[in-house]
Image (cartoon, rainbow, N blue to C red):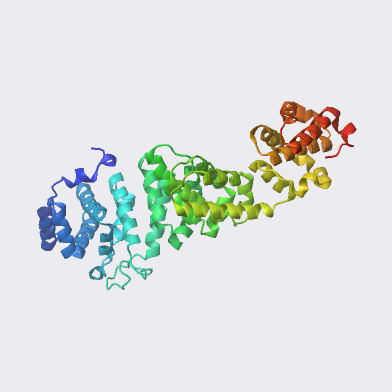
Length: 453
């Protein structure tokens, strides 16, 4: 059978020749007795054995992984550990028990199995290693395994060695996966559980790992890809607390990709983690201004209109909206004008009737193939707010007045018909500004400069 497609259940059905291993002195008599009691037993009996003698079983498992290199046996013991931790993840603490102070519990996984094994061995080793690391005592940042000094002449791995070694393997999986469909998800899942570690963040960024994650930030459809997207965004969120990672995120395509995801995703957990990430990044360098340029304020408004059950998400959306408003306040006058138009809610703020504003910024309307002008004209069709319609008509008349080709450009964009419809509007202010716009459209700037609002 292809080792890449092996399952834990299939492996656990094997009969391992423990007696042969004892006769060749690869395991002790005590280890043989432990395996005889544990092998092929119901879950309830195994659970009781682990409750009574957990550290002894962990020690036997570690010794087998260190001393026996037969693939079938290595897979079997990894499957035992995987099953043990799947049933109760808190059992990972057994690997840090005081009776194992002289055991380098990480070494077999890190130095042998991750790099030299088949995919089943690599995947299980990665998963187990991440769980053991996460379960270590808070004060264990020095010597492995239990923070105590070993009498062994052989030097133990340090926690930093283990974390850096694991990050190296994870980056390799993101570049050249050992398994075509499971390599990347396995790596991202593991990363999402260890990126809270400062040494993991720094070594991941130094290894240029952030650029390996960015392409994975894209809208997902099926359950498997949604989970990968969620865990990728979780990694980005964890990195958003780390300045060197933020510097890379600011210059990559991460931001527009995050905004695309949050616009299209219906999964609450995905939206929440992206919104929290954007909230973290808002105050960093030029990222706030970039968010405004990518029309995030409109996206946030749309998200707030949806029925979310998560109170943390609603709170984060409100906070993000307030932060974006503060950023807009800091923008130049045309940037502010642009945001007002893009949001589709126009008011008589001073810039609309400020001739200096129009004179100085008239060429800015040409950006992105007259994007702002096109949006203004669209507002005439889509808005039902009289104030917004009045201001939109007035602004079109100002563009005609100040741009040398204003009349032709507005006519080409088919604005005339839309404005003429508004001349019969029930609101007098709308009618007045629609008339002004039509007069300027017909007369042009040369002959209409005497017309006043």
